[in-house]
Length: 141
Image (cartoon, rainbow, N blue to C red; front, side):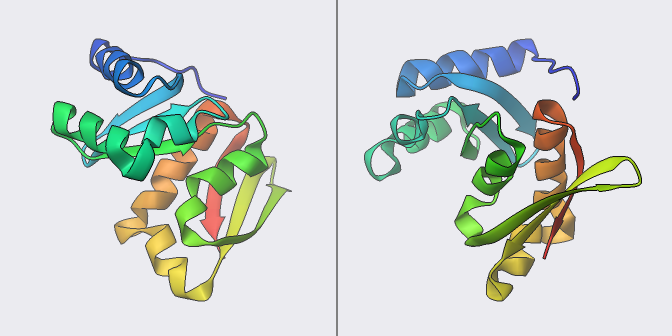
């Protein structure tokens, strides 16, 4: 597990997000195309808001795309939450050459979207998993 380093900027994002949504943020990851908030288990509905209103408010205030994921201490559940919108069928965690690997099985028609352009979603998932678990490799099946 990596040490989580929050910058002044991400701390400001967390404060804004918590003020707007009332949800508790566990982590904030600032990447070029969006800001990802991991919220406390049970706070996902509060974070998103009715019809996505809270996410829209935060997006408008930050002027950035916002993505919200429900945190879980359970690596399998966290992986499922990361890929939630791609119809997860199964999650398998294995040891491969002393590296913990998570394989997320999604519906075949969602596979390309789950992987993302140039593997972007896989990179994001790997980053989140390395920050919050001992999984350092992720693939989509």
